[in-house]
Amino acid sequence: MKRNFIDESIIEQAAMYALGAMSQSEARAFDRGLDENRAGYAEELAAFEAVVAALAFGAPEQTPPARARERLLASVAAETGHKVPGKVEAQSAPPPPQFRSVRFNEGRWKQVGEGAFIKTLFVDQHKGAVTSLVKLEPGGRLPGHRHLGIEESIIIEGDCHVNGEVLMPGDYRRAMAGTTDSELTTERGTIFVLIAPREVEILEA
Image (cartoon, rainbow, N blue to C red; front, side):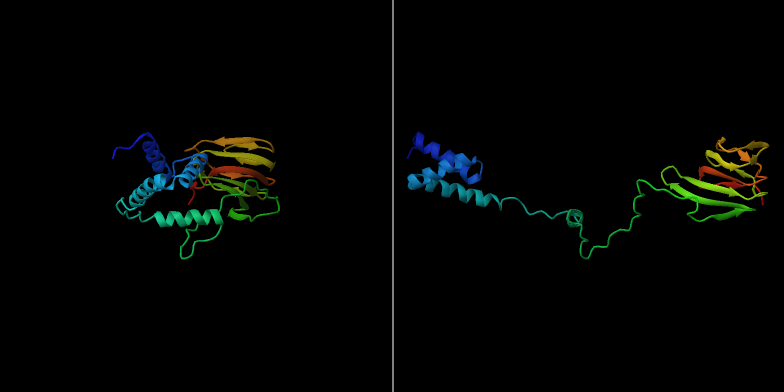
């Protein structure tokens, strides 16, 4: 039997309703029509609902990637702040604090030469550079060495003698990579800030 215009409209509405593609107002209107003309609406709706149900099983079964579960559990852990049971979490260094102050009497001085001590303040892993305080006692010295990268220093107090030059408080010095210092000494003692690569080539035996 050929469907009339009203039948075609019902078919279209039933399809949209079964697929959940109607707006709330359209769905409510269809519900009212279903109540008023159940025979005309219900038959078409039942047919489309059967098709929609069959579509859910029409796609081939897929095996998720091996890491899908791990990523899902990690995402849940990140959202909830709880550790994932049975998952061994990789240990990573905590990020450095946004601000840090080191008092002069804090930290540990390490002896690196005759009357020479150094205290590490910050290690820049990205640049491979270390910011330190260097302290030489009166008559102290650092051995001759070659710079493997740019070395910068600012004298804080005392006198610093290097390669025949005398540096005093407030003086700044930069040594380029590949240059050498025959030795570094002081008469009355000195303290200076040093920014240098983590490695240095000592020239003395």
